Length: 116
Length: 114
Image (cartoon, rainbow over all chains, first blue to last red; front, side):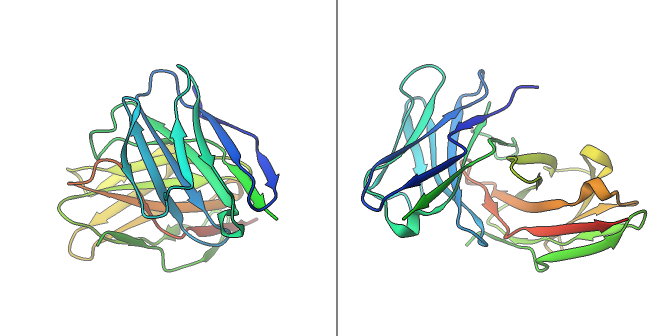
């Protein structure tokens, strides 16, 4: 069964450093998403991406964040200058027809980001 | 505003007993409701969804959920719990007018004891 994959599983970085979290969505999917979960808190939407552009972003997704689909398979989340409060589990998700509210999203296993 | 509430951080049940994991929601327009399960070190796995039609929705691994519009609830149920059902369960909602994002609950940890 096709799966969303994410690398690395755990990333440790120093405050102020740039990090890139990588995701490979399911191959025939067209809509891509990033979510994050701070330890003990809710899973929060960050951004959705379709047709090589952001379709929606939350207030969390400020200028420090960017997303990119650099080739036909990868979908990346970049945090330009990490802060302590960016420490969280980051989930990538994809769906084949995102423009319908009733379609489920398929999630990757997550990348745990620890900012020291 | 759209939101999901899972009032129980943890649910404990004995193997073989029925289980219920509660979820209530608030959304603009018709709700589209989902349950996901997360096992340790794994991503969120889709269990079931409600779009329209029958209020009782059946999903993977013997789980089902009941949509109740008047109570704005979508509780997850299983008639007979297994130890292997122990995991973290998330309820999520999308609104009719918002295609892109899920609103997730805070999660409920289900512990099934032998």
